[in-house]
Length: 357
Ligand code: ZN
Ligand code: ZN
Image 1: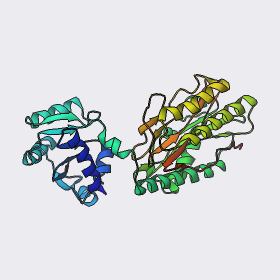
Image 2: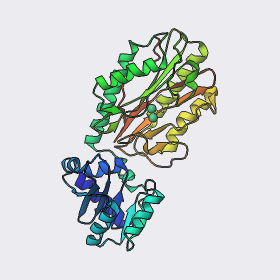
Image 3: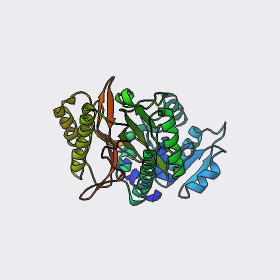
């Protein structure tokens, strides 16, 4: 698997005029080699190398049997070691991650390898990562199952008087008890007026009757992320809140219907957005409809007004419309969705019907 991924990257690079690449981004290193530690990955024809220090060499050997592990030291820096390895390979053009390597890092690389021309990798690894294979899909699905179970658990936990922080603690506990190895991202819990902040930071705000509580969370499993948002009601809701909830739910279902191979990302976004606009909430859905999910929580492509990409089977992407009314309330409903050959499948089957606790 890792061998095939590396070969595909090298073929893409070759078409772009580069003979190899230096990979620094942890999720790209992991996807190419299986290695999860620090350091860098260097690939070229006949070269599959991990450069790291003493703390990680044994781990790298265990995790990445297709790669050779080279130990860096204070004198033998990663840049010098890379120069030696590349020199032996005779690669004259190397790609580097232009969205990852710092200016300082780039200076060290060019000084160590004066004969090498560096070209941007232009997110080619990320492009290869867009379509997930069976094994990756199974890991995302497991992360989603853990997350859905944690949501079900929370339905018996949330009650008036709890703070957002208490809800977060209970939710994250449920994720870990269910088998999460980590959280996919910082959990968002927002109650009442805080719900109008799409990325609300949980605090000491207390859940009251008549509040909507939005929880955006996900487990990480086998390195892969789940991403789910559910909004529940506590006590009862007024007509305005019900209208907001129903609008978001209908927008989400309409977009879900449109997710299939061949659909343009911007068109799927527009389906949800124009529905929300028609319902009287123009300008109150201020973020994109979704983002791909994998080893990273935010991957490409995006369901956004500006993403012209077309969906393909194997892409795992979120569908998360929201309506945010400052000072009043907010609601977001999000599924992680797999694009299948004939449509799509929700990986987060937890109910989206309005639940009043
Ligand atoms: Zn989310
Ligand atoms: Zn999301």
